[in-house]
Length: 411
Ligand SMILES: Cc1ncc(COP(=O)(O)O)c(C=O)c1O
Image 1 (cartoon, helix red, strand yellow):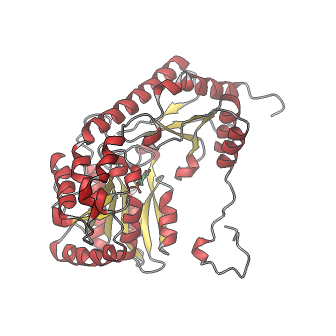
Image 2 (tube, rainbow, N blue to C red):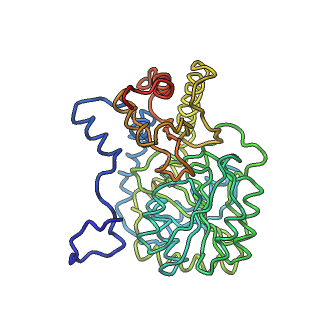
Image 3 (cartoon, protein in one colour):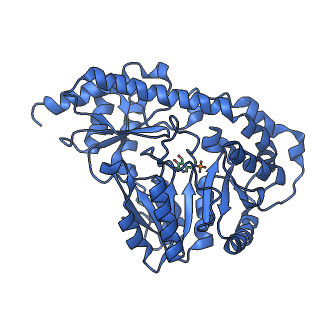
């Protein structure tokens, strides 16, 4: 990665990112400059998708009870109790004492890396997965060691690879994203067993990102684990927060639900409390509003699930209409807000993205943003409003079909 700063500038090496605009961002700014309206299938901000009337919930933060400040490192007892109740409502167990509030899941990752890792230690992360993990690790001087999810096997964990990486003496934790972004797959029970056994064998912690845990597209097959909360096999930290649970990322409230063998869990909570006390980053008004916000989540989640599943149905209908010879395939998902399209490798992913923007005004993510195992995938969000999506799927498929079977002359 080229260092963009002059050689004597006082910046830490961990911030020496390549800050040049990436090809996708350049495409978008060019299209916007030329006044072109894009259909943005990378949009995953629920507050921009006409889904949630956030105003009454945001108004709860204006209640005068939020005027007084009591610094409570792990969070206000009413808020921690509300999170425990949220798990209880889902038939899961996470005690009030096991909850740490933080500003976001991203902050939770940072705190856990501080809790678990020395500089240069390794955290095992799934590939493909969520691209922010790389930055979160950089900022804590932690190295990521990606373990493959096997695409051909429905993205199950490559347990052999996980075990080899876990045996590294610098490995400290295994991250699982459940369900994963962007593959939409919940961890299978057998893989969860293997992860617990490996964590136990090598003394690692599990960090399980369950932000999309409420968004299974239907009843989960019995082979899938609903959640990692409440186990006592290994020290486990389940992460979630309002950004997905109530589609309110702007409120900045996330949490960690810890579980594990009692002695080590107790020590983890005491250390986490010191980390949380150092930042005290969650605002009092949002903590006090949390019980009512969590109470209000059901219709929000229903609206999102309805949007996502009808988006998938529309995509599948367009695929059926495109017929047998259509060179695009949608990979199966269990849940989440995204779909993965497998496209021909006659063009690389950047070229597909560019052509779709230039010729159809449709913006998608290339698979490599999410560390897919090979070229030939596009990632689409299923949140955009149906009204805005007229014919998008069929236009996208037709364009890919056309460019696959009748490439532009001169190419
Ligand atoms: C898998 C996953 N984890 C965490 C986050 C970030 O959540 P938060 O807003 O709580 O930091 C996202 C955001 O898209 C995500 O996809």
